[in-house]
Image (cartoon, rainbow, N blue to C red; front, top):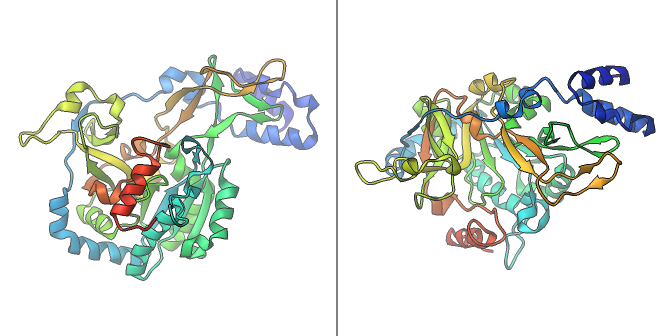
Length: 408
C-alpha cells in the first residue's frame, strides 16, 4: 500500500488522522505504519456503527447433557472410539494461551506461572502433563497448536523450548499468533500509541481458527488428516486434553461439536451455561441470564440451566470451515486505553475512554448445527487460575491439584 492509497482509504472512512505523523517517520517506520493500515478492514460493521455490530441475543432454552452416570455406563466404548481416532491422527489440540498473568500480579505469559510450593510446576507443565497421559496411553502424539499473542509470543516460545516442551515432541508443537483489532475512542476514531503504531489489542479467543488459517496451519491440519480439534484454555490446570472418552462420546453422538460442562455449584455461580438459542447450541453468559433462568428448576429439582462451560470444546474441522469469513458477534469492552493526544503526548487515562472489540470462542458454538454437552466432575477437571486470591485463585487451584494427587 502506498501513502496515496492509504490516504484515500483512510479519508473514505474518516480515519485520516492515522497519517498525521507520516512525514516525521523514517522509511522503515513509514512502511510499518502502512502495513498496519492495510490490514485494518475498515469496511467491517464495528467501524460503521458500533452499536449495531454488538452481539444480539435470541430466545434461550435449556439444553440437556450426557451426565456423569450416563457417560460412566459407556465409558469403555467411548474410550475405544476416542483412542482409535487419536491413533489414526484425526485429533489435534489447540491451546489458547494469548494472555498475560496480570491479574495474578505476574507480568509474563500466564502459562509460565509457577503453581509449585516445594518444586517448580508451571501451568504449561500441568497442561502438557495432562495431554501426555493420553498420548502415552494411545502411543501416538496429538499435534498441539498453541495460540500466542503479539505481546507474549517470543517469551512463550523461548520458555517452552528452554524446558524442552516438558517432555512433549517438539515436532508436534506448532505456534500461531492471535489476530489483533484496533481500539477506538468514544467517537470511533482509531487510537495511536506512537507516531508509527496503531493501538492494537488481541481480538479475543474467537479468532483462533481464522488465526490458524492465516498462519498456514490449516494446510497442515488437512495434510495430517485431522478431523477434530480440541480447544482449551490455558488457565485451567486440571484441563483434560484430547480426552478419549469425550472424543468417543462426541463422535458416537454424530454431533458437529462437543462441550465439557460441570453442574453449577449454585444458581448464581459466575459461569456461562451451555444451552439452546433459537434452537441451536449456544452459551449464555452468567450476566445475561434473567432471574427466572437462574432459578428455574426441572421436575426433579435440578437447575434447568445448570451445565456450566469450562472452555474445553471439540469442533469437527469440516463444520468449522464455514465460520471462516463470517461476521462474528462482537463483544465490545469500554476500557482505559493509553494513546497519543493531539499534541503527540502519550496519555494514560484514569477512566474508560474508548472501546476494544473481541470475538469469543463460545460464539463458535452457535455457528454449529449440534453440540453434545458432556458433564465432567468439577473436582477432577475444573481448577481455573484467574485471580490472585479468593474464588478461582492460585490457592483454590493448588488445593484441587493436591486433591488429585499432584505434588506441589
